[in-house]
Amino acid sequence: MHSLHLKVNNVNCTNNQQAINRSFTLVEELGLHVRNSVYHEFYPHGLTFTVILSESHMTISTWPEDRMVQIDLFLCNSDSTNIFKKAIDQAVSIFSATEFDYMILDRNMMCVMPL
Image 1 (cartoon, helix red, strand yellow):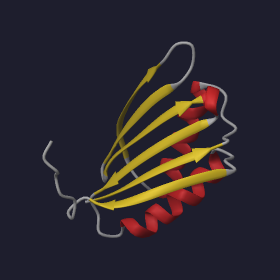
Image 2: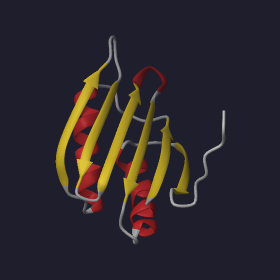
Image 3: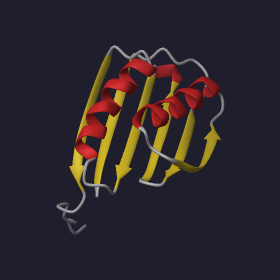
Image 4: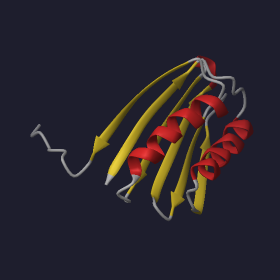
C-alpha cells in the first residue's frame, strides 16, 4: 500500500461546499471510485472530508483562514505512482494553489519506533 501526503498552500477555496465539490472533482479526475463519504464542518470555518474508495481512501482537511488544504490519499493498487503524480497536478489546479509540498510513503516499508 502506498500513500500520498499532499499539502497545497495559498489556495483559492473559501467555503466548505466549494472544498467538497472540488474534492469530488479530484477523485473523478483521478479515475477513482467513490463508495461512501462523510464530512465534519468546524466552527467558524474548516472541514475534514473522508472519501471511501474502491481503491482505499482519501481525506481532505481545509484551513480557509490559512488558505491551506491538506490531502491524504491511500491506494492499494500497484500503479499508484502515476495516480499520485496526477493527483498533485490536479489538486494544485483544482484548488488554484500557488505552493505545495508532498511526501509519498511506501507503507509496506514503514517501521514502528518504540515510544
